Image (cartoon, rainbow, N blue to C red; front, side, top):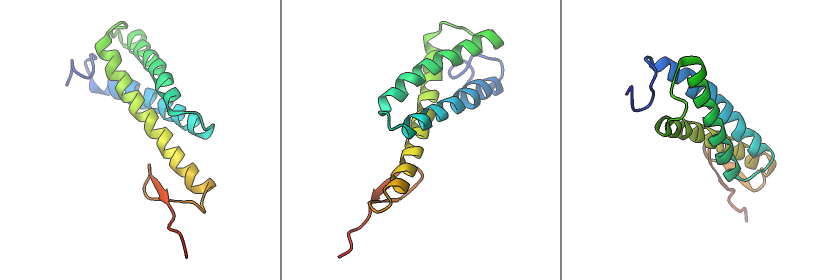
Length: 118
């Protein structure tokens, strides 16, 4: 996997910087956008910027390559996926708590219309 997903000598650096630090920031970004009812496309734009910051951390702290399209896209893929998951998780909670008479939660990321009582 080294060389495909990460360039550092240890996968732990990739997990720490990209998934824990970058993913945590992406989750909170997605959550903040959902709470303010912002559109999901804004989350993608913010996560692309966040992926650049993750790439800079790899470069500044662990001597990674700063301007590598391949590793930027890998970081961006993980950060966007986690950010969209945070957005959807929060939106599902919002829809089922704020509109409890209309929707019921069917999973951590989904909701559906409540059946009409007749």
